[in-house]
Length: 81
Image 1 (cartoon, rainbow, N blue to C red):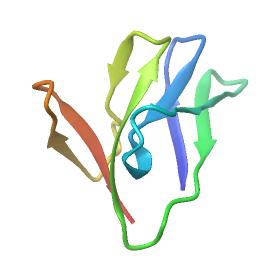
Image 2 (cartoon, rainbow, N blue to C red):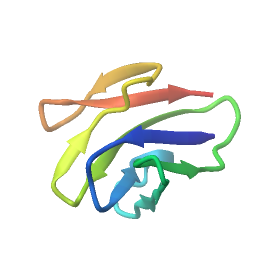
Image 3 (cartoon, rainbow, N blue to C red):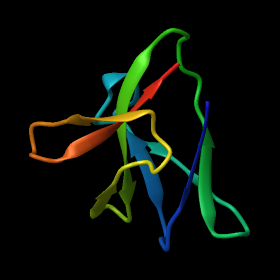
Image 4 (cartoon, rainbow, N blue to C red):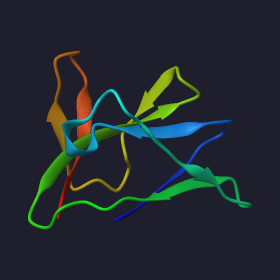
């Protein structure tokens, strides 16, 4: 699965995939300023995730399949495969 996000940032990480909120996936910065990462995820699965921008700003994915409420009173992005 390819993840891509546009952000004015030095570092963008993905957290929550496979229910892993502790170990982030570091995204690569492209020449056009976007960040991307290819992640292997199991078929027929659903994942909640968020982007973490420069270790301080949490961002949902604009193109996610859905959003789900979390314990912090905000939402997480949801992707269904």
